[in-house]
Amino acid sequence: MKIATWNVNSVKARKDRLLAWLATHEPEIVCLQELKTTDEAFPRQEVEASGYEAIVFGQKTYNGVAILTRMGSSEVKYGMNDEHEDDEARIVSARIANIRILSVYVPNGKATDSDKFIYKLQWLRRLQAYLQREVTPEEPVCLCGDLNIAPDERDVARPEEWKDSVLCVPPVREAFAELIGWGLVDVFRQHHAEGGKYSWWDYRMLGFPKNNGLRIDHVLATRALAEACSHVAIDRNERKGKKPSDHAPVVATFDWNG
Image (cartoon, rainbow, N blue to C red; front, side, top):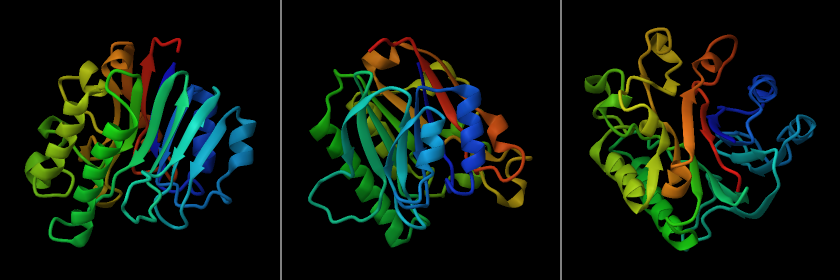
């Protein structure tokens, strides 16, 4: 079973690429982020014609997350449903093949001296609380998405250049470590200890041709599921060509029967 995550950076702009990618790779589950569209404007008809159910939590212009699946789903939940007032569409979850799947888009944070960075850290604390409230490390859980965190220097092509960015500073890396400490496994790192592999490259300054990238898109699984993970890869080819997203899909393969 393949579970993929992909920040498409506008599903409208990337619709043809998304549909072609689904047809080529046929993953059972795909978590999408940064849809930048409403539920109503999501290309549901085309996605369903490709054989996928679409669970969409959209937002006009910004944010938006979705789960696409070729398998049945249940227990769909939108947002964190906590005491915080928050109108940003950044998390959706569903139970698929007896796995709690979460598609997550963590705030970027903009700059470390901004209110948006404070919001990012608050949001990450809320995500930790959400996991503690909604699931347990003993059950099969897969948290996928653009977490806007490069966990360590192996995940950054130019560590010195990025060390003070909102993607790399200690508070966000500590938040990532807390997710792992709760009971999640970074399945990409499980198969690629060497580093030097990235999922995002800035459109500007020839980021992709120069491979000035960061690994900020993740598939995190609880131990029982992680032990069934046989392969993980970043599809760099999807970052090439005409009008790509600035992110590449991350695809994890699990020997899992539900």
